[in-house]
Image (cartoon, rainbow, N blue to C red):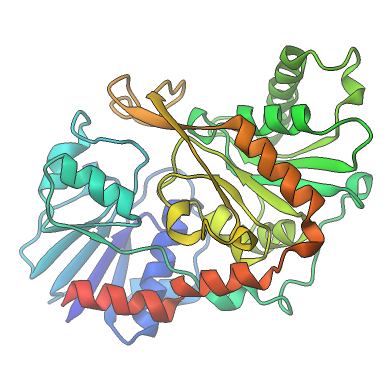
Length: 371
């Protein structure tokens, strides 16, 4: 068996990181794998040396191809198995331009069971669940010794978020829950590490101050904005090592989004003992143990008509879709729980749960589905 893995490796996104880890997982398991990059944007970030080595290998006579790409980049090939690895966050793809491309694949791999159900309900039956995989050595406490210097909130309990700023991510709920739950005499802080396509770091700083200011004004809790608990907005690019340092610096990760195919930041927060609070939807349901609060919390909610103000693709997140709306009452309840019970959390529980998705364990799943 010889595998060609095609992906958007150089996008500095969760999509590209998942593809990199999948390739390294197969390679470590002894699978003959080579890879090729599909350029998606003007980004051209560095990749691990081993990925560069595998990109230089000959691609003739491969027997299997995994295309971890946006579906409109999918190509048919005369091989034993032509696989589309697909991640998305809607409750149907039937009305999108992607549907016909998805049907072209011999098999579709998705990272969670909910997506499998979505595709099967849309009439696509050759769907397998292959979860994201991780190099667990990256979360070794002895390797992550650096913490970020944030003297103004050094001794505060720090809630935090890492990711994009868009309608699906539901940052409004994070800001609203934080400011409505905690009072002016409580030692808490909120750290938002965000990026938004089309805005440079200074523009995004201004945007975030206006965004938060509007939410605080709508809450009408204080006459003066300086009574609200502190926020820190981080808008510059961070390499992976600094992202891990941010996890290490903070206390409780927040991601009550309208949907996640996986959520790498939430997973890494769990692996580092930072008890992510996530929507009970999609990817986080695969790794957070709802019966063990030391691994994090899953927030229940309802499904509403999708109302996405800035979708990346015009035929996704339309009014034909529904998306998940987590209960803000329950988000606040769990924020309060972790704030008041931090000393009782066993951070090793999250790491133990994360080990289920190590290279060694996920390689067994991938090899089984390839053969």
